[in-house]
Length: 422
Image (cartoon, rainbow, N blue to C red):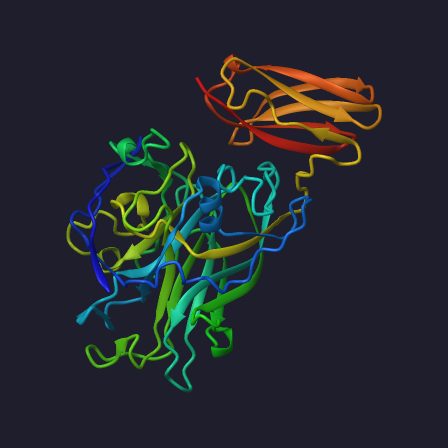
C-alpha cells in the first residue's frame, strides 16, 4: 500500500458562497494491481442502432475512449465511522473514505459520444430512467451469519437542498490544459446527522453475497432501479457492516467484513484528469474530516469533489448505469425517413452547414438546443422533397460551447452535436 499526500487545486468560489478546502489532507490509498482490476468484466455488447434504450454507461470506459487514455484503477477502504482500522502498509489507521458519490451530467460530451456502441446523444428535454446500478469492489467475506450491505442512493437537484449550485476552483487551468478553463462542479451535500444526501429520491440496499464475486476477486454488486432523472443527478455508495468492530483487533481486510471501492485515475497514476468546460460529471467523497467535523474542515456537510485535490485521487468511481429514455432521440443516422449528417466545419467559428437527406417528401423542422435544453434556433423548413438539403447556421449568433441540432421529420427526431468556438 502507498500513502498519497494531496494538496488543493485551488479555492472553491461561487457567486454566493466560499468554502475552504482541506489543506495538507493525508489520504491513504491501497496499491492496486494496476491494469488488472477489471480484466474479467463482461464486455459491452450493443447493436449498432438505437433509440436510447437500456444502454450501459460507465464513465471510466467512456473517458478512456473519448481521450484515448489508459485509466489506473485504485482501491479505497470505505466505512461509515472511524471505529475500525485498516492496515496501510503495516500502519493501522482509520479509513479515509466514508461515502462515495458520482455526479453525472447528461450533456457531457464524454457521455454523448458514438463509441463503444453507445448512443451519441441524450434528449436532455426528456426524462432519463436509471434502469439499474452496479459497482465493483473488494469484500472481506470471512464472517459467517453476518450480512454486509451496499447502499445505493439516487440524488437529484433540489433547490436549496442539493446539487442546485455550481462552484468552481480558481487557478486550475494549468492543471487541465485540454480544457484551458477553471474547473466547475455541482455541490453534492450530505446530512450531518443521517449521512444521507438530501434530495435522495431512491435508495437500494444490496446484501453482499459470495456468489457475486468475480473470478478476479472483485465483487459485482448490482440492483434494478427504475427512477427518472434529468440532466444532472448523482449516485452515492455507502457500506453498512452487519456487525460491530473492535479497534486494533478486528482490522479491515483481515478477518472481518469490509468494503474496498474500485475507483480510477482517468489518465493514469499520478496525473490530472481531462476536463471539458462546463461538464459537471465528477466523483466525490465524504472523508473522515467531513464525517467527524475535524477542525478547520470547511467541507462539513458536503461531499468533497476530486477536483479539490491534486493529481492522484479517485477521478471516477467504477459504476455501471443502465439508462433508457422513453421518448428517446434516434441516434441511427439512416432511419427510414431521413439521414442527418455531421455539420461542417465542426468545431465551427463563423458559418457551419448542416446537411440532411429525405427518403420521401416530408415536413421538416430544424432545431438547435444549448446544453441546458433551451432552444436557440427553431425553424419550420416546410414540406421538403425527397433528396438532400442543406441548412446554414451563423455561428456568430451563438455563444461558444456545445449544442445539439435536430431535424424532426414526420414527428421523429434525429439529433447530433456540434461545437461552437470563438
